[in-house]
Amino acid sequence: MSAPKTIFQKIADQEIPAKLIHADELCVAFHDIAPQAPTHVLVVPRKPLPRVGEAAAEDQALLGHLLLTAAKLARDLGLARGFRIVINNGPDGGESVPHLHVHLLGGRALGWPPG
Ligand code: AMP
Image (cartoon, rainbow, N blue to C red; front, side, top):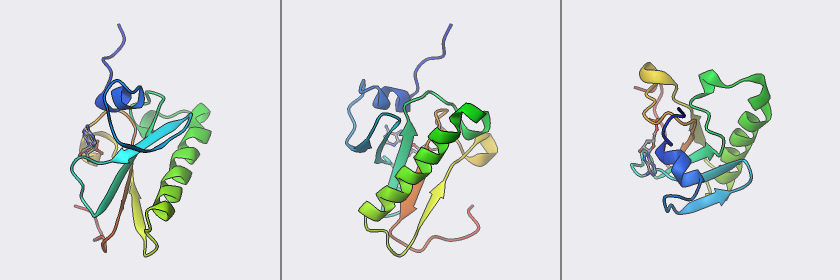
C-alpha cells in the first residue's frame, strides 16, 4: 500500500490550491504559511522524496535544481543583502512535513546558530 500523499505532494499535484511563485517540470515554490522571516519560501520537488537523507545518486540533478531555483527566487525576490537556505531532516532536524522541501529565508538579519 502506498503512503498517503503529503500536503506538499497535493500542492505540487494541484489537488490543493496554492499561490505558486514558481513552477517547472521538477519543482514548485510557494510562500510558507507560517513565515519565520519577511520572505519565507518553500521549494518543493514534484517527486515524492521524503527527505534529503533518503535521496539517492539518481536525485543529484534534482537536488542541484532545487538549490539553483531557491537562489534564483532569492534574486527575483530582492534578497540582495543575503538569505539562508535550510533543509530540515528528521525529528531532531525539525522536519514536520515528510516531503523534501528547501526553505528560503530572507528580508532580515538571521541569527546563528539556529535554535
Ligand atoms: P519543516 O518543519 O522543515 O518540515 O517545514 C514545514 C514547513 O511547511 C513549515 O514552515 C510550515 O509552516 C509549512 N507549511 C505547512 N503547511 C503549509 C501549507 N499548506 N502551505 C504553506 N506552507 C506550509
